[in-house]
Image 1 (tube, rainbow, N blue to C red):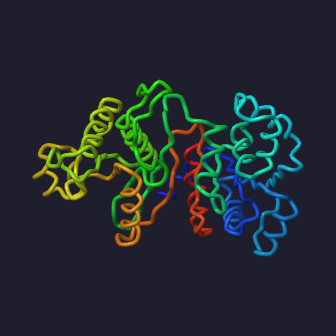
Image 2 (cartoon, one colour):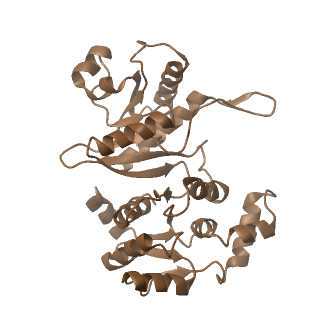
Image 3 (cartoon, rainbow, N blue to C red):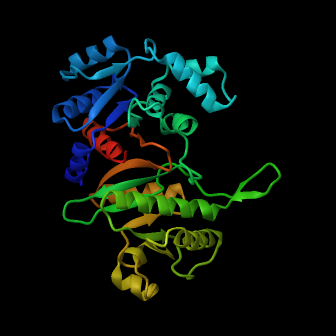
Length: 333
């Protein structure tokens, strides 16, 4: 997978901004990318502090761009742009204060075209990475929510994709002030399915999307089953170019014998490689089972629905994960 993505980046040069430029894992990854030459890192932080940490770790970042919010010459233009984007939700002083933080500053660098993509979260929480993205970069036209997926890779096995395992805790109808439903829970889950299928395709997969449940084709009853069943119908209508089916249990999704017994005629049952979970709890548990017991390497969370590639690292990540997620994030640009 990474060989293919690196070839893409060699032919399409990209800049990626790191919001935590003094972190040793970030610096190790940036030094490696500098040496490899197919992707240009931009580091956020105090110049002297970043260089000192790099020297301490023995990381060669000579020549890389280091941008400090405290001395950035375009800060006033940045403040003005953010103030306009927030449409009265923040004062200019509040915008200026937020832009002194690496997460907001880095996101604005992407918004203003200084960088093509952003990777954060080595020390920031997921919320602190996603919040500036929603406020500044925002969701792309037609997207109603931000979601996530993980790409799972194992030598000798097919690539898998799982969503949403990190962002949307559950799916509830969204209502306006008068109590009218503006976006159903099923619409939201269907959007996650379609976005995850698109991501899977971006990484070279032919997505066969299983909408997971404790029920297969009506074998179980309940509101959770109805949600998945309704979302399946919406997703199929929204994206007829993808093979999407459900609701189905996990065994029906992955075992051809069980799948065709429980869901005869389905192009997905028994052959799924893209799995949509009905809420975050099962999704988070599911991808970690695949990772820890199944021996898959999990890459993500890959954020979906934004106007630019912005991804979140685990705070427990190592330099290798930063390097790999840098390639994935930049390739999405």
